[in-house]
Length: 140
Image 1 (cartoon, rainbow, N blue to C red):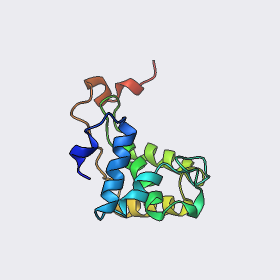
Image 2 (image 1 turned 90 degrees about the horizontal axis):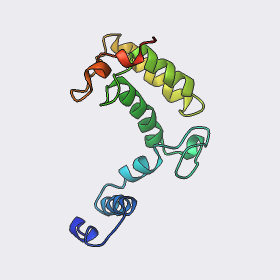
Image 3 (image 1 turned 180 degrees about the vertical axis):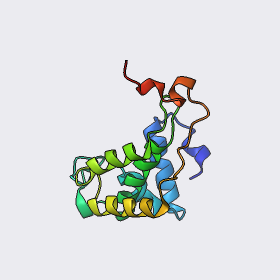
């Protein structure tokens, strides 16, 4: 099925996205489908869409989950500045055993320790100036 065929009818966003995932799965992207589907699962089973827990979550999705949070918090977004790496580590460490597989959190920290403390903080060029400067987090 072609993408143009998917868009001919009136589908809601989830239906189109689901069909694209299925289309990709039939075209050699079989490895990406479990990652895309399961990267919001939580180690403790409180995630979605299937409430999987522990090793029932595909390994790639468990890795993607912790890497996605690291990337999202380490980089600025249009409405917030990037967190400092020490803050990101604290947030991820708090999620170990609940949101993330503890062994993967340890592995991430080992890799980051090997890279050193000069990891860049990426700023979003579209962020509002006060957000990019981090002033929105200052206490009055």
